[in-house]
Length: 390
Ligand code: FAD
Ligand code: DHB
Image (cartoon, rainbow, N blue to C red; front, top):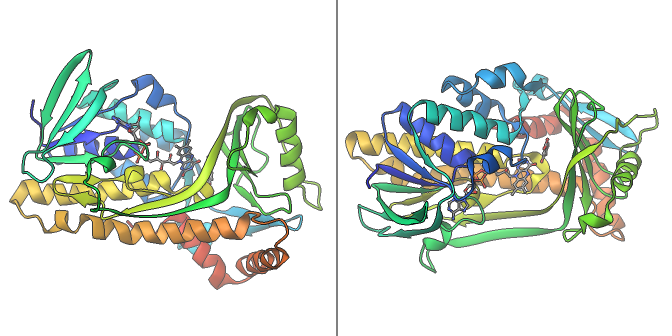
C-alpha cells in the first residue's frame, strides 16, 4: 500500500496533521496502536491556547468547542492565604485560554477525518520503520492479524513519548535534553461544581495545588506529591483534606467537593530531542518533547509542530522544494525551548523542592509578589500562558 504521508499515532499531533493535510489535498494514513474508544476517552490536558483554538475553528473542527468550551480571561496565583488575579486578557490585547478536554479535541478530529473519508487504522501493532534515508520510507505493522507494509513519501512520528519512531533513528543522531523534577502530581476528576470560575495555582508550604475544571459540573484538581506516590495511600478523604489545607485563604475559601471519578499520579519532567527529524522521518508533539504539566502546554505544542509540518509538506508536495522541510526542526525548536523555559520557570516558582531550603522559599515568595504586583512581570506570565503567536 502507498500513501503520501504515513502518520504513526492518533493523538492530537497525528490527527491534526492528517486533517490539515487533507484540507490541502495531501493523502495520509494514520496508524494507532490503541482502540478508537481508548483514545477518545483518555483524560489528559484541558487548557487550549488562543492560537490552538483559532486553528481548530478556522479548519472546521471548532463547532462543538464553540458550544461547550469555557473561555477564561484570567487566572489566580494564590500564596500566603491570599489570591491575586492575573488578567490574561487585559495583559495580552484580549487573548484568552479555553477549557476543553484533550479527549474532546481527539473525538472531534477523528469524527472530521472519518467524515472526510480519512484512513485511520486503530489497534495496529509491531510498528517498524525502514528506509528513512531513502525517498520511499516504509512502515511495517500488523493489523487484524496480518502483516502489512505502507510505503510513503514522508513519515510523521506522532506516537508520543513512549512511541517507537524516535527510537528508529540511529544512535548518535539525536541529542536528548532532560530535567526530572523531584515530585509529581496527583490528579483527580470530581463530580463537583468548580470552586472558582478561573484556574487557581497555589503555592503552599505543604506543596503546590491546582484547581481546574472541565465543565460547570466537573472539577479537575491536582496536588504536588512524591514522583513515585502510591495512589492507594490516597483515599478520597485524604485528597480532599490536603486540597482544603493547601487552598485555604484568610477570607474563608470554600472548596466544593463531590465523588471522585478518576485519579492519577503523573511524573513531572522535561525532555527535548534535537533535531526533530532524520531523513524522511519528522517527529512531532510528545515524540520529540515533553514539558511538566504546570502550564498545560503539551497539546498546544503538539498542534504548533504539526502546523509547521503541514506547511512544509504543502510546499514539498506542491513544488518539490525542500527548504521548509529542512528547516522543520529548527523552526519548531524555537517555540519548544520558549515553552520549556516557561514551564521550568512556573514549576520552579510554584512547587516545594527541599522542605529545608528556606532560602529557595524566600526566593519563591519574592518572585510571586513581583509577578502579582508588577505589570511587566505579570505580562511575561500572561503572554506565555495564552501562547505566543503560532
Ligand atoms: P499523544 O497524545 O501521546 O499521542 C500519541 C499516540 O500514539 C497515542 O494515541 C498512542 O496510543 C499512539 N502510539 C504510541 N505508540 C505507538 C506505536 N508504537 N504505534 C502506533 N501508535 C502508537 N498536558 C497538559 O498540557 N496538561 C495535562 O494535564 C496533561 N496531562 C497528561 C497526563 C498524562 C498521563 C500524559 C501521558 C500526558 C499529559 N499531558 C498533559 C500531555 C499532553 O496530553 C500531551 O502533550 C499530548 O497528548 C501530546 O499529543 P501527541 O499527539 O504528541 O501525543
Ligand atoms: C489542567 C492541567 C494542567 O496541567 C494545568 O496547568 C492547568 C489545567 C487541567 O487538566 O485542567
